[in-house]
Amino acid sequence: MVQVVFNSVGKDFGRDAVLRDIEFEVPAGRFVALIGPSGCGKSTLLRMIAGLEHIDYGEIYIDGKAVNDLAPKDRDVAMVFQNYALYPHMTVAENMLFTLRMARRTRAESNDRMWEAARILGLESLLDRYPRHLSGGQRQRVAMGRAIVRNPKVFLFDEPLSNLDAKLRVQMRAEIKRLHQRLGTTMIFVTHDQVEAMTMAEQVVILREGRVEQVGTPLELYDRPTNIFVAGFIGSPTMNLIGGTFEQDRGRLCFVPRNGTPIPVPPGTLPGASKVGPGRECFLGIRPEHISLPGLDPNSDGGGSFGEISAEVVLVEVTGLDTHIVASAPDGEITILIRGRFDTAAGDRLSFRLNFSAAHVFDAETGERLD
Image (cartoon, rainbow, N blue to C red):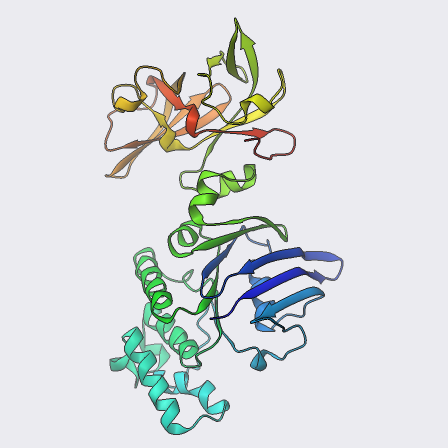
């Protein structure tokens, strides 16, 4: 198991800076996901690790050794591509053996590694088939098998599940996670799907416009996003952001939404509120599951850490397990997640309780979390 370290890494395409001062560490044996919107540089960063893109400045270290000037074949990494990149004229077995033959491994060693990878991935019965005879999930397993046989120091995955249907993606997520638990090898996984990152990775790196926004465990990013971008990117449904100010009303601290009535804030319940001066524009960030309906959630009754807001229902989405309610609040729409089923319809006016103890305050100008 090896560590991967990024030291002020940067990449330019002409006059455009694609990656700027990337600094973070991938601990040995960890599963790390790189995530961000399209064009943020995550795939470029992965290709720089593999040696498929030149590093313009900074250093990348693998197992304590700078790899900037090493050829891809000398970095001891294996990459699984989005489009599988299988040789169509070779069988599954030949695809998996090809890199070992190029590395001049003995026939016996190559066959042993191929059979072991086939056993791990359940490919024993498919070894004589050609890629055109395989399903998308089977092709992805073959691409993973081709990487496994090399026994690399680091596995790199470039959005390997994006071409699969929803059910198969869930299945392959579980297979890749089990593979990591079995091999214990350092893995770096690029995805645009935050659900994949949250469910698979031990550590998540969020990129935006070529810069690192936040690094942490999935729950750290979910519970304590460093800024509005991370708060809105992680979570489905996304975090509600309600614009407004904090004011004193008859000795009580109140959050005043734009175009709305003051909502009293119970003392000591809203981290960061004390850092916002009167009249200073900010955003109250609150997850949909932290907004409740009095009567349905017994914990929300009787005051405590809750404030109340009235809103008109705009849209209701019933998933079977949960009910998503989109309501029109004074500063725009908010989403409420109700565990279970709830009978309401567009046009209904409901009172919702905001759990201030689970909310965040973000500065309107910088977007940074203040708590």
